[in-house]
Amino acid sequence: MAFAKGWEDIELYGKTKEAWLKQLFPLKHGIPKHDVYRRVFNRLNPVDIERCFMGGYGR
Image (cartoon, rainbow, N blue to C red):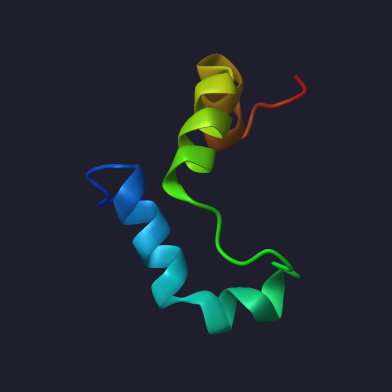
C-alpha cells in the first residue's frame, strides 16, 4: 500500500499476489474490489491507526 496511488492499485496488488495471499487468508470470495478497501479505510479512526503504528495501542 505504501506506493499505491489509489484504491485500484491496492486491488491490483491483491490480484497480483493472490496465490501468496491465499496461503495466509482463506479469501473464499477472492480479492476484494477497490470499493471495499475504500469503504473499510474510510471507517477506520486515523488516531487509532496512528497508535497502532506507533506501538501505543491500548495505552
